Each structure stands twice: as structure tokens, then as C-alpha cells.
Image (cartoon, rainbow, N blue to C red; front, side, top):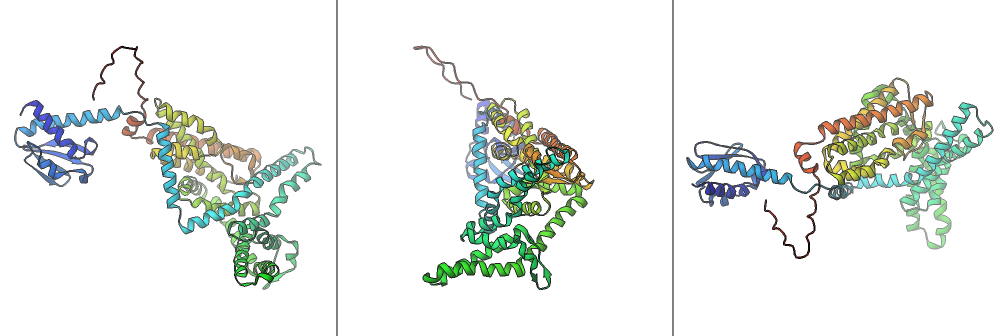
Length: 495
């Protein structure tokens, strides 16, 4: 068989076994070409048997064997290996994977995630999150004002202004249950003001005069969870009334029953139950970090990005709000914010590892400032998640930063955020703790730095396979130079 025929035979075999990307190994014995395949289903057995020079095919364990006969197999095998190597070299010369392509891949992943998250439980969590999200601007503003008042009080500056700042910063939190009740009724299809009216029972000072089955009530008992449950019950009662009360009496009977029945249930049941649950949440969060320390912080910081992908992070919003209502800050948010730090470190490593991919580097440059301020979605869906492995190494960075803060919490430097929403550097003005502002800021900054460094190192050394680097670290092919009028153009070379 001539050299050309050997190459022709090899060229006929290659696409029928799934192409060069499906070939894991190549060897031969006296009569057979032995190929290790990645995916057996890509092989066309009937077409292979019809190739001139192929005497048969045999599958033996992990190898696929093509019978070529003595002599011929020794000549076809080198030609086959050459074709596989050439095809892989040509694939490395493909156009660069651009930021636009990654963004499209990220958008597809995001849409797929939304479709997977459209389960009844996750949709319910999303609706609960919709109750609290509108409260975030007020939480941020009041949290910063309260922090400013505390700073002035500690420094002894402008003492006459401190009580005013305390009133402004605390007024919203004293009535947050009313706003939760209002938003709950609005989200679940009830009359918002009736939901707020029922929830207002919880914070009314007069409840201190009520004994519920031997338990003495206190204003605010049950907090936002009690308000949420009371408003949900009010929506159910209102819907029941709308279906059964005659129209002539609806304007009088429905609002009365909607406030009265849930109000009594709230006073003689929900406040006690929700108060117990709220106290349990606070105790669990405190013990989780004081006893779990670095391990608890590592788990929380490392799993937050996957929780976001699964849509389960929305369940944390009522918990954050409950902790803020109880103690003035949530100890969980600074730890969860470390996931964003790992994301930033991973993005910086991608930037350094792909110096010739100008499109992706431009995306990282534009998204990085937002990432530093805790807005991680552009980096997640534009960079790390479409790439795959950098998303995992970003979680490693988040775990390291969370472990750092958890360790110091166990050592006595406990702190949290007075509001939810901001993250990254934007969280600094909202931090409050028991060990002084200097220690609080230093530990949080140390956690961010740990997340950045670990996310960078994990991604730089373990975030890419050789094949990924070959495909991604390429510059777009330059455009051909313009030709003068009438000048003949060269035919393009065929690969």
C-alpha cells in the first residue's frame, strides 16, 4: 500500500471513530489498529467495515480494534497518529473564545438555572424574598445613620446630635414588622394596609398587658417572622371573606374579620411560636460561630455561591432580618460576603492566565469594580461560571475568607452587618461588633484579603486544564490587509 493510500485509509477511519477529540490512545499489534475511545457511541461500525482495507472490527474491553492485516497496520497506524495530531493542532488555532461567547454561555446557564428553580418551594422562597427586598434601602440608610451616631458617641463629638441620629436610625427598625406585614399582603394578593394593620399588633406597646395562656407578652415578640405569619393568615382570611360575604356587607365585614381573626391568633399563638423560633435562630447563629469557628465559616463562605445557583439563598433573607431585629446586626452576612471575595480573586487569576484573550480581559476590567463592591453577577455569569473550573476555585476562595472570619469570631471578635444588600467593600460602613470598630474593620479586611489571595491562587494553579488554556488564551485572527484596486488576491491556504 502506497503512502498516499495509507493516509487515505487513516483519513477514512478517523471521522468514523468520532474524530480526533474522541481518540484517547493509539496503538497496534500484528494485525489490528487499537484505539482508546472517550465515547463508544460515536463510532459507526457499519461504515468502518465498508472502508477499503478494513478487514473487520473487534471491541475488546477498553480498546476498539480495527483489523487491517499484517504489514498494512504498521503503515496505517503512523498515518492515523499524524492525522490526529494535525487535527488537534488545527483546533488550537481556532478563533479565540471571546467574552461575548462566554456571556452567551453564562446567560444560557442563568436561564437554565431559572428553569430548574421554578419549583413550588423555590418559587415560594422567591416570594418571601420579594417581601424583604423592598426594605433593603431603608435598612441600609438607617444602618449607616445608626453607625454614625455610635461613632460620634464613642468619640464624644457633637453630643447634642447623637440622640437625633439614634432616633432616625432606630425608628424604622422599631416598626419593621408593620412594613413586613404590608409587603406580605401585597405579594400574596391581599390588601397591603390590612396586612400592615395585623402585623402592627406585634409592636403595639399595649400587648405588654396581655397574658396568652399564662405567658406574658412583650412588644416586638416574634419580630418579622411573626409579622410574616400574621399577614399570610390575614390574606387567607380576606380571600375567604371575599368569596362568601355578600357585596353589600363586604366593605364592613371583610376588613373587620381580616384584622380581628388574625389579630387574635397572633396574640394568642403566633407571637409565642414566632418568638421561640426567632430566639432559636439567634441562639443557633451565635453558637454556630462561637463553637464552629473556622469550620462553620469555611462551610458558609464556600457554599454560598452554589446556594445562589440553586436559588436557596433567598431563605437567608428572613434570617438576616430576624438577626438584625434582635441584635442590631446579622453575623452571617460578613461571612457570606467572602464568596464575593473569592470570586474577585478568581477573576484576577483568569485575567493573568489569559494574556492574549483581550475580549475576556476587557470584560473582567469592566466587571471588577462592581465585584469589589459586592455585585458579583457580572463576574459569575460573564466569567467564572461559563468557564466552569474557575467557579469552583472561586468557592475555595470564599471558604478560606469565611474560615478566617469564623476563626476570629470564635476568638471573641464577633461582628456583623446592620443591613442586608451590600457586600465587599460596600459593607465597611455597616459593620458593627462587640470588640470595637478598629478590630471589626481589621478582621473583615483580613477576610477579604484571604478570599482574594486564595481565590486567585486556586484559580491560577488549578482553574485551567491545558486544553482550556489552548482554546482560551488565543488572540483573534488579524484581518487581512486591504488590497489595491485591480491587485489580484491570493487564494487562502487550506488547513
